[in-house]
Length: 146
Picture 1 (cartoon, one colour):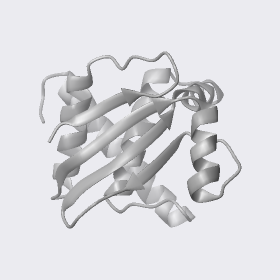
Picture 2 (tube, rainbow, N blue to C red; picture 1 turned 90 degrees about the horizontal axis):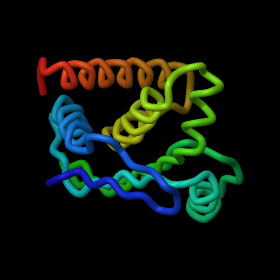
Picture 3 (cartoon, rainbow, N blue to C red; picture 1 turned 30 degrees about the horizontal axis):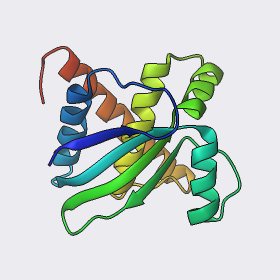
Picture 4 (spheres, rainbow, N blue to C red; picture 1 turned 135 degrees about the horizontal axis):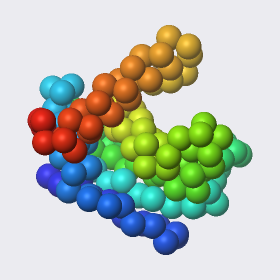
């Protein structure tokens, strides 16, 4: 199944959605899983804050919220990404927006694959998995693999 990209309440366009679909699928396949129904939705801070309050009882901004609908080895879910928060984070980290939006997208996918970031050990494992996936994206961009 294809990976779908949507925009909720902001003016945002993801360049080369086909590349990002191949990347996400390759990442999922690397965990010996298959992509099912997967949507990545880009939105504003206020949109994610509303979701955070309504579904998670959290009253703070975040860059990503993942809703898991997995069934067995089929990875399905909705990944909401606040493009506003990503832009803010990129500025704070002194990195470009595209690098940070890719990291946040794959962070949501990795949550669907069972990775968490609740403690230092898990955060280190998550960061390593993000870096591996970002390397795979770079290879795809350079025509070196899927």
